[in-house]
Image (cartoon, rainbow, N blue to C red; front, side, top):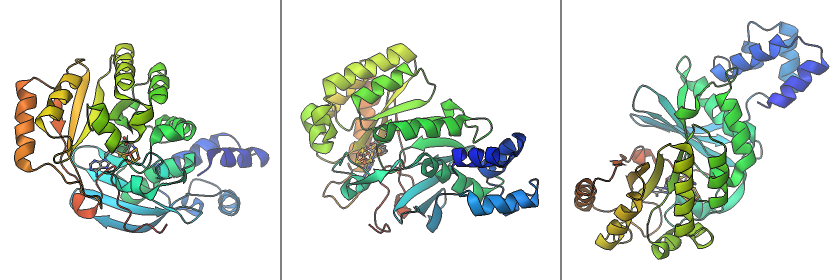
Length: 335
Ligand code: SAH
Ligand code: SF4
């Protein structure tokens, strides 16, 4: 829903302002699937709204699920598709959101990267992924957000920031900053801007190698945003915000899991007590890269333990339905 369009419409029709709050609460809760369902709104107004203000900007094309995850393929008004994932592992329902159709960064191990870049998502398209889940799950609702779907959030900065305002707002989705995480491939200027915002939103940086040469091979963004500068920017973030900073590391056999690479990784993470490592076994995409073996992963964990590195090993959630965040498969998308 386009909030500006809605409030302009209400104003132009001299509708009292409390109706805006009422409509927004109805909408974001997921309780209603159309204006007609808003039983606390006068019938005439419902009909006018139905005709003149778009309701939800995304529609489900496909939904697949396994025990703890669901993946929805959502169609946009121009017929492009994006994916959003729901994770149900603990007390919070978590939605993994996309910010772009495709991605301009082109990491070699990533399914979205392979698609190339189509366009940025609008604010409505970002927020409506949550509304879609709230509608499907009502009376349950999304309590936590991760920006780890398709696209590079910081490459769609303005719409990301505006969507965060709605996600945060008590009359809209009312999700607190500490319940939101953004993952970036490491755009230094944007990380610096984010640092200055003094936000309680969690930040994760996709590291994938603590060696500039290896990292640049995996992530072309590293050519223009090199590791030494990224490290400086990361230190500025933790020193300024005093918040933990998460580094994501997808374990790729013979590429970033060798003893030399792991030594460099340990050194990197240990440079600051607020640096925290998230290990993820690589989800196989069409590329010829494969995940480190379980044996190698346990050796690496032992090494990290021995060196007192703070880390977690993320389970490969959703891989059976190609729903693992950040590697949302392109199989179903019509492009
Ligand atoms: N574009 C942003 C956020 C989306 S990706 C970013 O790159 O950070 C979320 C995470 O999943 C990132 O760390 C990304 O590098 C990682 N990822 C992408 N493809 C993956 C794959 N095939 N296996 C494991 N992790 C992957
Ligand atoms: Fe884009 Fe992130 Fe995939 Fe890299 S890993 S191509 S930045 S979505």
